[in-house]
Image 1 (cartoon, rainbow, N blue to C red):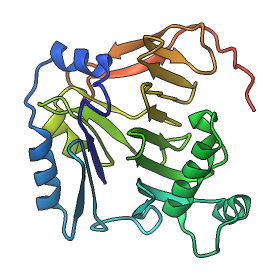
Image 2 (cartoon, rainbow, N blue to C red):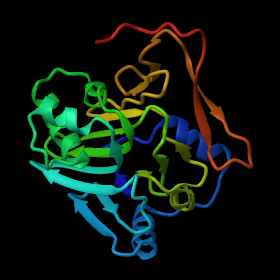
Image 3 (cartoon, rainbow, N blue to C red):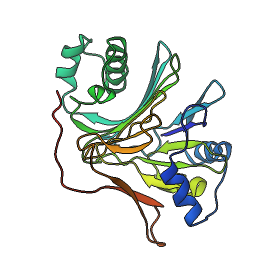
Image 4 (cartoon, rainbow, N blue to C red):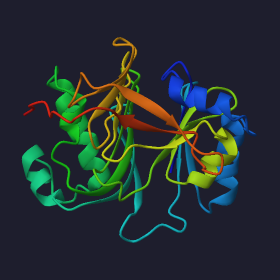
Length: 252
């Protein structure tokens, strides 16, 4: 699956910009990235949302245990890969029919919590159990929401294209050709949300905020977070590290 967003939706994270500048490498534009995805994946489907968002997915070569799916409802678009172990109980929790699958569940959960605002974005994934990665785009509010499971069972990657678009995909090689060293593995247990604020949660709980002014640990807000440059031979430009002892903040 592939999701591409212009800088009007999400500002390219400084850490990935810096990583790409430190070790210059060939890049291509967002349009070329989408074209490559469509040409190399049989029966791929793509969707343009306004002038700033492109989504694409395919069932080609997908694992039966980690299928890809897509849904749109009330201007909420969702790409999902994986499976939820507690899908049945979540259907009951949200009052949904037994026919509702994972991608519809995530869409409905996002809508329910959005409409009950103010709810932290992590409440959407707080009760999900299984192997998954998903991208939600709410066109009505230009909100981007991205998450992966706690252990990274479904790999997810993100990077910056030659023309400054931020792309998410489950194929590292696809993004490597378009993003060069401005590329990283999405943090395990990661969560990202964008609506004036971009939030990144990893297994220690981190967020990046344009209002706060940088990466902060959600569970350990006083701990400094650094972007560690990768070695030249590594595919990634950088990885993220929370420094200091872990003092987990209480949360519901």
